[in-house]
Image (cartoon, rainbow, N blue to C red; front, side, top):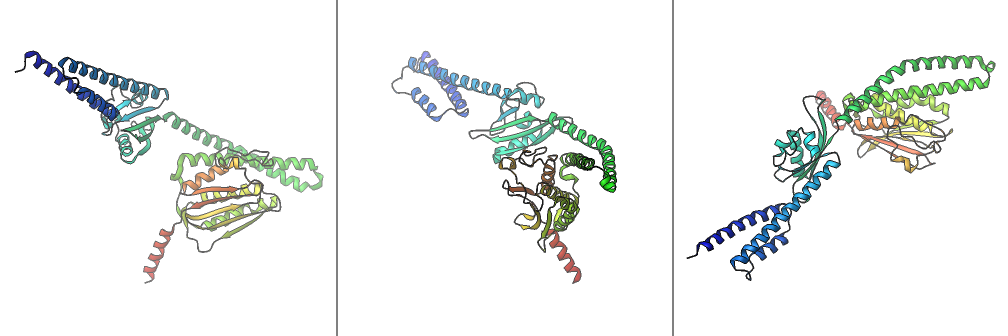
Length: 433
């Protein structure tokens, strides 16, 4: 029979062992290495230490080690949360079963939660929105997910850009960025540009008409008007046209960026015919510059799904740029042909080319190449940005190939509408039968 002291010791040791097992389990779930746990267990059952006092001392030492490991982990998590607060974005770490393990202050603020109230809750309880939970679940299952979510009853609520990634160790990291102010400023900018463009368009149109009348009078006057005055009137006409073009492009870009693809009125469009029409509108300008225009369209091309006016604007902007930066006596070649992605339109010039340093940014709005390399030619910096938006809105892509001093080739591709055309042919065949 064991004495009462021995029974107490055994019970105490059993309780300590249970506590140790729980502590080791927590430590393991928090990332403790299997080697460290194995060493701890080996020390706990060492045959050389069988006495009650030694066993109790060993259990106490193991318990202190588990508590120290737990404290160290808590400190690291606290330090991580502090670092996450410094970066100004919300950060949430979810376990594999989508329960919150870490959530910084910014995450609580963005989601309207009391500090610390998210810990231990499920994703739907903590995040409070099925869309956020779906992003976290998608990251857990697929490795990464993201989206933009507006919280609240209308557009005045908090707008969050959400990015989630599965941790290479355990769980899922979710990053929340509040972009409500950015979206508000973007709306203000679009409204400002729209209003400004409308307010400027009327007086600039009036000035343009007056300058045209003045130019006609100067031409009628002939030699009676000094050459210096005739030159000044010509420069006034050019600058007035540049201002009118800038206003029109600002308005176009504001509308495209605010409306996106929803503004397009899609139809089956003959891209070759659009190219020819656009070139004919610009032929007088090219003749004044001493530049020849040539159009080549591959026969039998299927239509593309798009808006003819917008696609015509793509050709017009590209051809206008090509002519502007081409020397007198050169030519600009416009081609429309089939490629692997759909129907491709290209504009090739023999002009000054684009430096390699500028090619990566040439489609950014307001970006202009170095004037020293463009021989004093300038523009608004909006034409190619508008082209990129229109092409992207049609589901296509645009690229540039250029060698400085040897010309440039801009090529954009729009998906063909072959299934629609095939269906129409089949329906026509049934009708003939």
